[in-house]
Image 1 (spheres, helix red, strand yellow):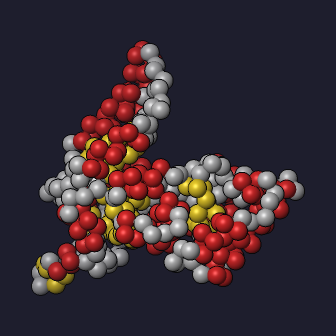
Image 2: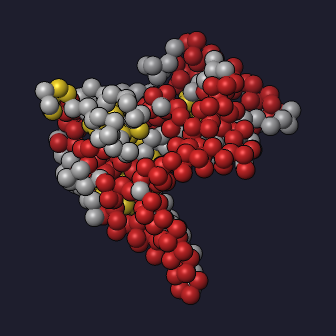
Image 3: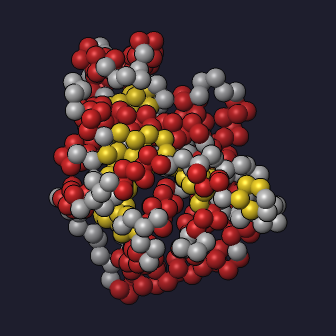
Length: 380
């Protein structure tokens, strides 16, 4: 069922939208380099104002990377806040910088041949990414390559601001599709052979499908897997990863383009302040899941695994302050043993080994015991 958006009286909404537009114009006046420097500074200060969220980021990092030292977790937590604020600045600049003439300067395409092949075939393609790197640039990259890209998003409550967001993306060939009512609107789009992009790492709540994510059961929405199965779509998983000032681009066919007798590598004075590598992590289709004992579980677990692979590539560019593991499966909430059927599903996943499943079961038992004792489990 589509959600009914709350409407504000124009006398209230227009001044709010005007104030927001005025505030967002300041970084555009300052320039991206200056705005990014301010974002880095704010990202270092902001955690002091919200220590509970900063502590959550460190706790999540400890669960995902248990071998890291406390200093490493602290540095990564600060970096992910800096990434969050810098990302906000970059999103403001994206409509200006990601153009047909200049997008190759800011988006470096890695080895994405498999994903392009899937789209060129003209069949349904679902593109999956997570809150890692700059997910908006994935849609821009696909639309700049000439594909009619559709991206699922949550409409803003302020209608005038939402209209501005929709129109600015549309000017770059990117069509936004509301997540409310997407179950009905997406199948016809996919059947026309037009790719759909989804940021798919949100929690599905206590009723979601629980699949592995960094060795722990994580709630994931079923809708993406159901959509792929309904339309027979290929699932292409990738990310746009921010490159460091002196970091070499990933290998890809575009590196064959030479400049001044060598592979193109900008000098420090040429280096653009917005530079991302678009990378393919995984690509799979109906042939991979049709014979699985539980196709929906397989599809969901596989794209969640792909998102984990994205995060491992750039952990400082992920939103660790989110409640990643807040929702818990029913057997933990009801203080029941780990279900044998779920264990069998995990073992049936080609990439899961017996030791990995045993470790995941042990961590689930720890959470179950903590809930039974009334203790606060991870993110709760």
